Image (cartoon, rainbow, N blue to C red):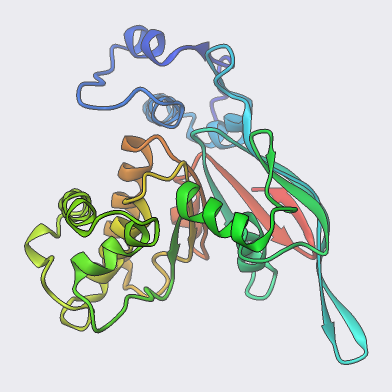
Amino acid sequence: MTPLPEIYLFTPQSFAARQGLSTTGHRLSWGWTRWLVWRNARKRGCLASFHHAAASIIVGKGMSEPYIRACSLSKVFKSGGSDLVVFSNLSFEVYRGEMLALVGESGAGKSTLLHLLGGLDRPSSGAIYYGSRQITDLPDTGQADFRNREIGFVWQIHYLLPEFTALENVMMPLLIRGWARQRAAADSLAKLDDVGLRARASHRAGELSGGEQQRVVLARALVGKPSVLLADEPTGNLDFRTGGMIFDLLSDLHRSHGLTSVLVTHSLAFARRCDRVLSLEGGGLGSV
C-alpha cells in the first residue's frame, strides 16, 4: 500500500489549481474539497491511506473546525427493574462540511445516537453542541424550531403522507415555518427538480417507486436549507442498484449544498465512500 506522501494544507482554490482539477459548476466547500482529495488519492493508488488520514486533512485556516460536538453522551433505558445501557461516555466531533458514516451491528445504538444528534431524544447524560450552541438543554419548542431550521432528516422508511402529492409532502417543513403556500410551492418544486422529480410533483406517494419516494424524502429534507443532514439507513429498503443511485444523489447534494452529514448505514461499501467511518460497538466508538 502506498502511503499518503503528506497531510495537505490548502484552500479549495489552491488545491484545485495545484492538481489541475476542474471545479466548474461546484461550490468550493470543505466537503467538496475533501472529495477532490479522495479522487486524487484514488488516482495515485493510496486510497486506503486516505481513509485513515481523512480526519487529519486540514482545508485552509479556520475551515476545519468541529461543527457538531458530542460530549460524554450516555443513553440508558429502563427495562423492568433494571437499566439497559445503550452506550456510555461517548465523545466525538463532526467537522463542518464532513460526511461521516456510522456503522455497527443491529441494536448497537446507531439510530439512538442519530436521534440524540437530531434533538429527537435527550441523552441520559452529556451534551451536544452545534458550533457554540448547546441543544441538549433547549426546551421542547426550542429543539423543534432548531430541527426545522438547521437539520434535514432522511429515514429508512420514507414517512411520506399518502394523501398528499410529492410536492405537498416537500412543502410541509416550510408550511410549518409559516411560509405562504405559493412561496413554499415554488421552493419545493425547485427542490424536486434538483432530485429529478419535477415531472412527478403531482403524484401521490403510493404512485411512486421506492427510489422515487426516497428522492422525495431528500427534497423534503433539503427544502428548508439546513446546515446538517442526518440519514438513518437511507438505502436500507432499496435494492443494491437503486440504493447506489440514491447514495450517489445524496453525495452530490451533500457537496452542492455545503452540508455537514452523518449517515447510519449497514453497507460498508457506501460507508467507505464517506470522509470518515466510525463504528459503534459494545457501547463505544472506534475508527474504521
